[in-house]
Amino acid sequence: MFPLGSVLFPGALLPLRVFEPRYRVLVDEVIETGTPFGMVLIERGFEVGGGDTRFRVGAVAHPVGVGELEDGTVGLVVRGGARFEVDEWLPDDPYPIADVSQLEDEVGFSPEIDRAHASVRQSLALLSELGEAGILDVEVPDDPVLASWALAQVCPVGPLDQQELLEAPDASIRLHRTMEMADEQSALFRMRLASG
View 1 (tube, rainbow, N blue to C red):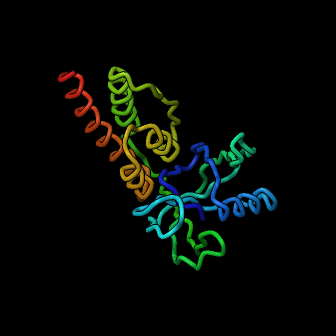
View 2 (cartoon, one colour):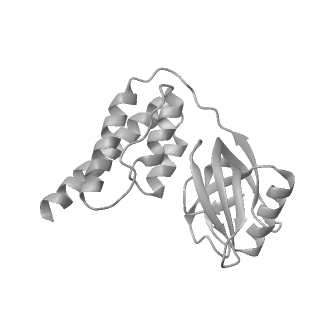
View 3 (cartoon, rainbow, N blue to C red):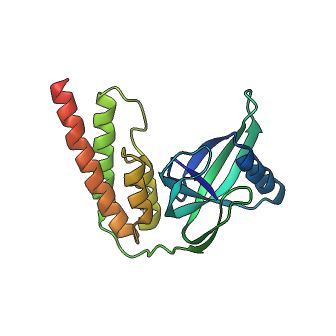
């Protein structure tokens, strides 16, 4: 397991810079065996040194690229896979280890895709007007589950809101909450623009 201050969504790419010795061991084992590992958001504490409190829902990380960086650290790019819930944290040996259960995503029908996409697109456009560069839009699949992950990944919210989206039990709820969060962010961005 690799706890950190970012949320990994299924299907998303995430670059990592690995420098702690215990996580270097993890990366070496992952590269040697070709097996994925789990990533969870740190609830309280820090990424370095241990002693943190972690959320119980995370995503499987599949390595897609690795290389040594100029400063001697390891650069690793992972793609998010299936979600899981931690059943039990085991003793670190030398990195965090846990027993987990995979979480299934109910597909269902969701009329929220277009509405959520419009809300996220609006919030990203307003963020751009504030001079904060970033993604202006995203390709949204027709499948509700894939669409929910694509929109959650780019919705301009912080890690705790991202964690809420990761933990949503199905695509319809995730799309609805993404739309609400994007609308809330749009309101804040409009106030900033008006005062600026």
